[in-house]
Amino acid sequence: MAPARVGAAGEILNKVNFAAPRRFTTALKSDLKETLFPDDPFHDFKGKPLNVKAKKALKYFVPIFEWLPKYNRKLFMHDLLAGITIASLAIPQGISYAKLANIPPLIGLYSSFVPPLIYSVFGSSKHIAVGTVAASSIIIAATIETKVNPTVNPQLYLNLVFTSTLISGVTQLILGVFRLGILVDFLSHSTITGFMGGTATLICLQQLKGILGLKHFTTHTDMVSVIRAIFKNRKEIRWESTVVGVIFLVFLQFTRFVKQKKPKLFWVSAIGPMVVVTSGCVFAYLAHAEKHGIAIVGHLRKGINPSSLKNLDFDPKYISAPIQAGLITAVIALAEGIAIGRSFAIMENEQIDGNKEMIAFGLMNIVGSVTSCYLTTGCKTQMTNVVMSMCMMLTLFFLAPLFSYTPLVALSAIIMSAMLGLIEYDKAYHLYKTDKFDFIICMVAFFGVAFISMDVGLMLSVGLALLRALLYVARPQSSKLGNIPDTNLYRDVEQYPGAIGIPKTLILQLGSPIYFANSGYLRERILRWVRDEKANKASQGDDVEYVLLDLGGVTSIDITGVETLVEIFRSLEVKEIKVVIVNPRLEVMEKLTVTHFIDKIGKERVFLSIEDAIEGCKFSLTRQRDFGSEEC
Image (cartoon, rainbow, N blue to C red):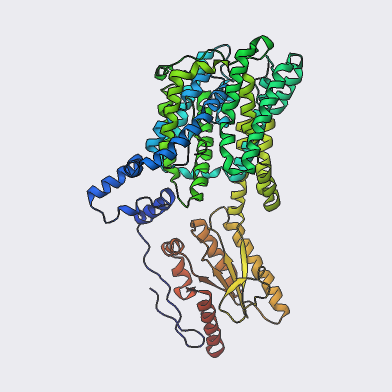
């Protein structure tokens, strides 16, 4: 600790901590902990016996051991109802999204059987129901179609889908094990809103093929190609299919309207897709729909699919497509699943671990890839998933053939209805009213997905968001502080115009890390502040003799930043202006100490608070008048 110093009125100023810097290993351990374990998940382990720690570790890494011992019959009755309800939605959804991914419908059903069981063991959220998702389905289809045509070579195409699922699961597992959830945070809220809106728009347009009964279509996903394909093949449009499709779509939208108006009737919307599939099957069977141009799903066999381990294909000729699809869908599925889980957890004042969710998603997709399943993630509601999985198993064993008569137009209507709910106009308008840059990021994602491709639209939006973050780093804010009258508070004079300046003193507050990327800008900005303040005080018959740099908001500084502070000190010393450092944080003080910066300027120029700095400068000015001293 530095010795106490005397202020202008003779009072003792607060001490500044000049303790020796921490060892490198200590500092590195602290930084890694904050980076990888910001939620301090093992805080309950401290001071506990080894056997207790072992039990807690088991419960942490395998959450089923946490909730299962507390499970009771009352909870099961609620989960039973929820599981059956979700299964009624997962059946038509599984068939529909499998169609979207251009794979057999049975794979879609199977993907809601095995993965939920894995998630119920390793997942940390009780609000997430595992199932297939539209965005990932279409990304997989659009990416793998560039290498293999699903119509010409369906088995190779399906093998690559399983391979992309494995790659996605391995990616998610690695991200979770190494606590790299921070990477998912690069998908901002505005990016996800725009991406999902653009994807939903594309999917809706693509489903016009099923609604209109078209036989020929495009494999491209951009909006222009889809619209061109519809006009090009307009002679294939069947009015019978169109009428049935519109009826189903209107019914599904009506159920969603009922849910919005009366939330207690949420079950109406939940069973809507199953009603459409069931009624569609009955209609197609009785009316011989195929004879009227209304295509049906076709044969669905009963039973459990064989292992798909032998189907994984790593042929160098095709592997680039599964890798691309796997990496993109891994991040998208994580962002969507974790966001949904957190939103439900917040409603009940709970918290979920994003990294544990990554591990759970990764494990269920790895297992899914070798058990004839494709990519799954969280949809929307741990025993519930088990119940849903059992319902899906019963469906696969006994009811699957009944869905053979499902009209494709019914699946198209289900997909369109679900996608219309993902185009969040209100959120986009809210972004426009509150943050224009976020709105631009959202629109770049939307139009990039809609008119170019999903991966390009996503990358453009993420790139723009990163550019914005880099601008914040490269051009950080600084502010001039003034004293709020009759208080000891010092605030930004632009925000508080009533704040008054201190005679012969300029107080500047820096609010960001000082790095090589922004140090040059900060140097010029500080010197400009000094220039403008000297001109202002000169007009008032005053002058600037001290510049106080409040570093309380500077969380870190690199060598370039230290050299920049040296340059600032030298530049202002030439102008007979003394620079004083106020409240440097631990990491900053350590760097200033090991670089001997503190030795160069003197410990007497470092203060704990702005008030102490001002008192110290007043004391120095008094000594200068009385003794002609040049030291602060």
